[in-house]
Image (cartoon, rainbow, N blue to C red):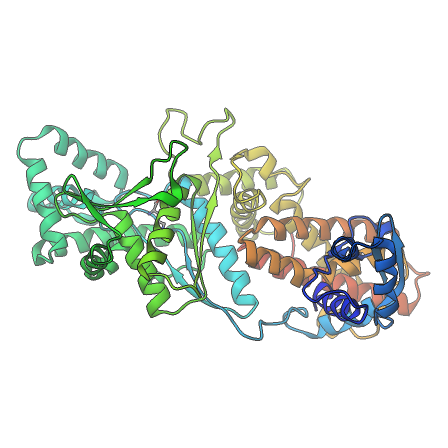
Length: 580
Ligand code: ARG
């Protein structure tokens, strides 16, 4: 069910019948306050400007031609020419009844599914995943889930960094350790960070080591079997490590979704040849460079995009160009979404402009680097350990569960210890995810344990608790929610507000999918839970003097709230529990 789409169709037809030029935006929006109705058609103002007439007159003409009697109880003109639409309670009730019958709560699948590549998580395998990869991983995963829920064909791509020059030094170091008879599992990667540090130290200090490392990079990229075998050992172990993190995080990425930088190796030469042939890349101090006037600075100097190093080595940029070619020309996708830190914004602008010029990215494919801000500590600086080190994602998640468990211990509970541990896990991980997902993707935010673990305000624990409260009604009433029957009747204002919100799930998901912004779904679920609380206060359900009919209707509403919270949190990758 998408009320907005329905009203856009109706408004378009009315505008056409009223003689308003085709293509005029009907500007349908959800009303911000109940006194403005439930939806508004605001297109009269724009149309009046084009026609040079009075907007209120235009609004009246639109209303005269508007065929919405079966959905609207009242339509009125307000202010300069807004059209306020008050929906019929019967329409809301019957729409909810059909949503209740539907596994997807009335959210329709796209008639023509989009084919979408989503590039997310994408850690660098030389290092352990750190908090910077948290955002890419969970925002990307939420958007993927929502796209799939809407019926799109999603190709997950974990663009792991497994191919940079640092691998020369890593495999040279690994080779030595193995020769010393040290067990790979035990030493090398139990602590990727220190492994990397040790290798780097030797690279900087030890005679001959740097040369060996450089030699190994060339060999590796040239397909040398010995180097590749060492590299593969290293990759396997670090992939295993990231899989542990994905599991903790409840993220849908699997091994089959890895499409790492090395996967594009065979294409890199071809990309450079093409760029040279088309005169897009030129030689500059031995390197291959693309000068981009489109991104010139204020002095008119073009932006410099290096695509091949002077020694012939390929770069991050070369791989991303090859990835454009693969995704657009070979997979033939409609959209490419890439979840990366905002500091990579320029890089992706350069990639897109260059790729379009070279035909590596066709017009049909929309290229959407979806940038995110930085996670900050309480001091307003990028989040670090007390000693200034990077925080390992895995440690952070363990801490979240520990803190959730302490917090839950303050509350009375009849549940077994095992059940409580499971709840603490869901609450802790959910809290970290919701705190991140609920911020606008592009803004920086301050990471704060107390706020995210609070049972008040827009947090995962609040929503998870709200869900258990709704479910507890069914236990109290001794009713199986699956067998609920009867009709929904929307009478009280709190019922109407709740009904309307329940029917807006598809609209929210569309916004989230189009803009790659899970925070809109987070906000929606919080509003839904809050409206539910007001409904619960105002509309008794289990009291003796409530009629059978009212009880059934309200239980149906409760059931829809529970299902919507469950589905919405699922789409954010946050788990619920039946009891707390
Ligand atoms: N590995 C990169 C990093 O950690 C992110 C890669 C994003 N994807 C891409 N196609 N470049 O910053």
